[in-house]
Length: 191
Ligand code: GAR
Image (cartoon, rainbow, N blue to C red; front, side):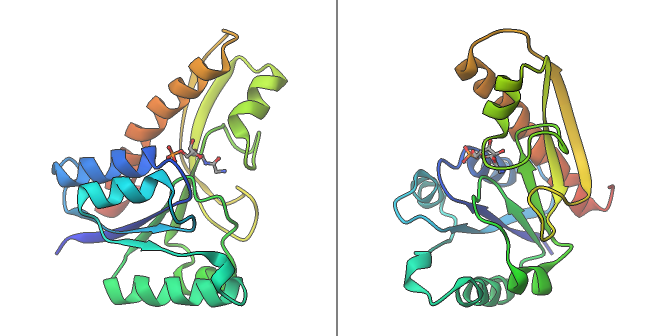
C-alpha cells in the first residue's frame, strides 16, 4: 500500500511540484501525492497540479462561514482520500483547531529560515535584512503557534552576498530536496 500524502499550498507551488515529481518518478519509495489543497483559486500551484494529474481541492475561504467550516470540509476530504500525512508548502494560513484535532501530529511544514529565528510569512527577507551570514531551511511539525512545532530537519548554508533574489533561489534549491528526503524518511519510519 502506498503512503498517501496531501500538499497544501497558497501560491507558486515550487515545493509542491518538486515533491509530486519525485513521487511520480518513484524517488520517494511508496509515496503518492494524492491531493493538492489550495486556498487561492487561480494560484500557480493549481496549474501545476492539473498538469501533473494530481487531484486538486481548491477553495475560496470567503465562501465559508469561518475557518472551522472550511477546515471541516478539508478534513473530511483528507479522510475520504485516506491521507496519512499533510505537508504544508507555502500554505500561508495558520492551521486551526479543527485540522489540529483531526490531523495533529500528522501535519508538517517547511519554513525558509533556521527556526526558531525568523518565523512568520517573510522568513527569507527578515533574515536577509537582519544581516545573518548563515541561512537555511527548517521542516517541523505544525502546532497551534506560528512556526513553533517540533523540528524534524534543518539544512544550513553560508551566504554573504547582497542579492536577495539570488538568496531566494538558493533557499528554494535547498528546500526542494530537503522536503523530498524528509517526507520519504518520515514515511519509512526512519525519523
Ligand atoms: C517556500 O519558500 C516556503 O518555505 C515558504 O513559502 C515558499 C513557498 O514557495 N513558506 C513560508 O514562508 C511559511 N512560513 P513555493 O510555493 O514555490 O513552494
